[in-house]
Structure formats: C-alpha cells, structure tokens
Image 1 (spheres, rainbow, N blue to C red):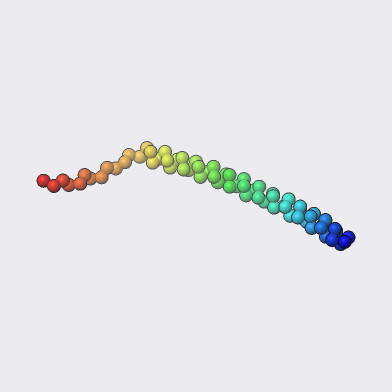
Image 2: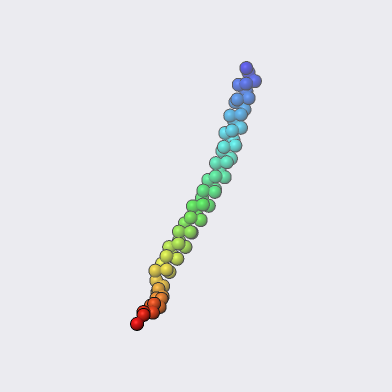
Length: 66
C-alpha cells in the first residue's frame, strides 16, 4: 500500500515537471506561429492591393457572323 502511494506521488511529480517543460516549448511555438501569421496577412493584403490596382486586360470580342 505504501509503495502504491509513493509511486503515485512520484508519477505525479514527474508528470508536473514534464508538463511544465512542454508548456514552455508550446508557448514558443505559438509565438512563432503568431509572427508568421502576421507576416502572411501583410503579404496577402499587399497582393490584394496589387491585384486591385493592376488594369485588367480585355479579351477579343468573338467574331460575329454576317
């Protein structure tokens, strides 16, 4: 019974330490992802503005039968 309680406590402490370590890594990845998303949105806005400002080419009218 005592070994069961000790093993549970040791497992709990190990789980807390592993979780704390992984939370730091996950937070770093989230920050990087936010930065990349901001850059992607800026580029998307730039491309949209370029697409709106460029003149559209007109195609040839189809030949009509006489």
